[in-house]
Image (cartoon, rainbow, N blue to C red; front, side, top):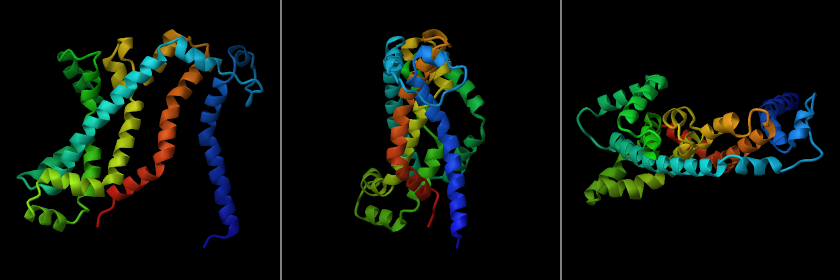
Length: 276
């Protein structure tokens, strides 16, 4: 049992760590509500403001096509996540319940793909997408992200926790594999499915390297690449408050999503990593 002093010490350390982690977010939000003149007149950083303004947020949507970046990111995120969920669910079901020759070898080869550096995959994908003339298209953005070995592994481990007797009983009753998957396995594995969906949404929303590499047309920029475009050709590097306002607008959806579903994320990861 921990003594009261030990508990207080732990709470103090956790509080200090929370301040360190949250301070950049506070500074980003604070800077976004400072006027351009006020921010530039600060020779010593000021950690509060008595005259907040929303002018920077208006500038973020009028000086650059931030709304278009949002729409592009939304289309990319929803399409990629939807297609990936179909691929991941069917793959995990095949590895967890179906019997076919070489299943263990194929799954081992799948896992070995996680050992390949991401830079090599990006180079291969870039050459492939370029040869198919899919640069500056949503298809080129989406295709390389419609599968994930890690998510297949996570869902497979979750599916394998479902007793085999249920599957055998369903086969005796004449239930097909897809019907069994839809009626039995998916409802049981719902926490893991929700977790995978949320993590994929966050991954797509934060995607930077691939979208930046495969698109040079502003009509296909995502919010991550749009931030760099804003910095270089939008407000300019001097208008930091407007830049921070754009970053706040882009970050809010993910922060809200995580706060709403943080318990389901942890529950799904715990279920996927526990057998028996």
